[in-house]
Length: 273
Image 1 (tube, helix red, strand yellow):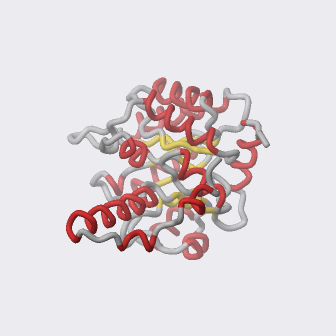
Image 2 (cartoon, rainbow, N blue to C red; image 1 turned 90 degrees about the vertical axis):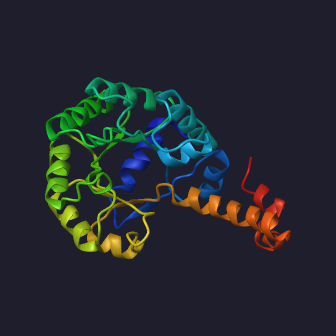
């Protein structure tokens, strides 16, 4: 069955209305997207770090064209709604963020995030005014689409050397006033901080799992007020951990014990087209 982009967008928006929290996993290619869909997840999201890894690069070293091609492959792999990690919108100007949203919709995405990280070591975050301008431009572009594109606004304070809960909340509140549909602050240190963020805004909050010691449980996050839980690069890292463990066993020990822990080809093929 082919599901229209409008229907996917409506389904995705409805997931944020509760009750409770839903998990949105992050596949790294069409095959992993099909596996996650078969397991019953209701939506998928791209990860900038995972898409970079697939290309043999570090996070932040992927062009907009490459990111959108990667997203299109995941969109086309299943009938699930897909949201994308669009980093800073692939440009500093507000119009760059807006154009990225329009291009994201053109490849079939029904949601995407814009963050306030600059990618520059000496100036890791945009100032508040410019960050809000960029979100507002992305929101305007999203509202101009013929379906409800879910725009997530993301502040990188806790990942970029500015672990201020007050500034994080202030930025999220400003993003909410600018029209963002979902709010996100990766790296929050504890559940108390998660609760504080959720209480300070009225839009759904996305919690990014995948940081050691800061992932908690779905039940704990839902109780704290989180509506969406993304997995970032964690599933990709789990897969790469399995690859490294197996390859090191062969190279260092000359044994193949990992074969006893792998899926049979027939079982894996059951997930594929």
